[in-house]
Length: 308
Length: 273
Image 1: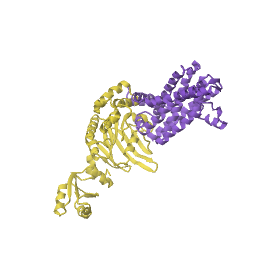
Image 2: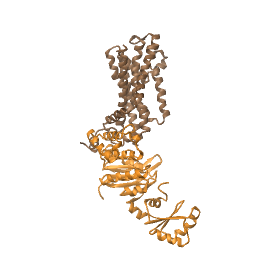
Image 3: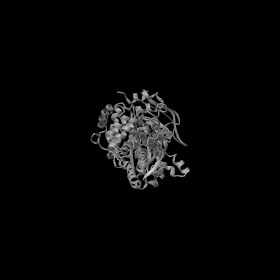
């Protein structure tokens, strides 16, 4: 295993009686793109804040570049670029001023920051908006600016909490493209998301979290291989008949998931199964064969959907 | 050229490095950039208020009152209220930035959350914001001095020492104001600050000596920062420096320290819990 930048053992965070993070272990290697996948309330953001040295753990250990964030908070934060779930840009300042002053918070010289700002404006594709107040920016632009701002100190690790939540598809793709570039440049990324497509796109390796615990760990492909079959056949018989046919279908495949509106059948070959079903004169109203995704992995691990 | 990590490492062995990165000036720099694009109306009103009191009470009511007897002898009423109003200018300036502006940054714009994700500590943020608020108090009191001097209300050159004293008063109010604001969550609670401030100003001896009160009320007023501020400036204004002047100084030093302590602790609890 390559050099480990972050290492957590038995990491736990409680808020009163509520356990937000429940004894998790993980490691993040240098240059890796590491994901925390799970529904809202799984403990992803809390874990991120502990790594970012802005939240104190209840128990367990964590080391970031060999340092305990509780004892070396400012040093740990100097290594990180943080993109929070909700943009907290400085609404009284312009785009350029936002980037500039953030560099100054790290104690960087005016000369260095001014040069860096030009570079980041180009990276975030915000050159034309550089003298505009941030309130006037679109959601996607604000997000790009927040990412650029996090890069002003040339961090070793970039922390992205739900980077594309609330963005339209086009803005998401622009953002993903920017993040790919950072990955290519060797920046270590830590990403939380409840979008499986985002996790598949961006993460080399991820942990699936639910109710403060890690349910599984691996690359997206490994997880799918381990916890799902190659293909999924989705069939709908209408809400009344679904219950009726489910026992029959159960006999015909590796695994079955009954959702309120449809039935998911896990098999190696979806088309072949569909033919068998039709041969039994069970005619579904609609049917769809697709590759298994992380959504299926999550369903398997928790019995619930990612987005509820 | 030092990197962000080298800068943080260099600080790591100093005591209190977890709460103070020694960079309150970055917060002041941010405020000065934001000022360029802010609206000047609320800034002007904060300054004008004491001037209006000076005109209405000094030159209006004052003509009915004539002279007033104080520990410094018998003096013209307008001259009597001028130092109290200068102290009020300093307080107004300090309160403006340290209460409503801080409330907005805490609750609406989440600005401090962003700052504290960097190596900055809560004391950098508290100290930077409070020093900035103090600047406004300083500029208000200088402006007030510039208005009162040509009117013949400033008795001597030594009264110029009222300016550094006003800075101390502004520091105390800014520090305390930010501490209180950091515990407030709603606009209704913020309204309380306004409700408390006006009577504190009116009844703390700015417009008449508090010797007119019954003993218990006089004693109560003497516990308030407004009274200490007004008395401190008045002592300097009329050159009657004695033990009580020092007690006022100490009062504000304590206020500054308490305000910084509670603001820092609250910011840490809010954003680094």
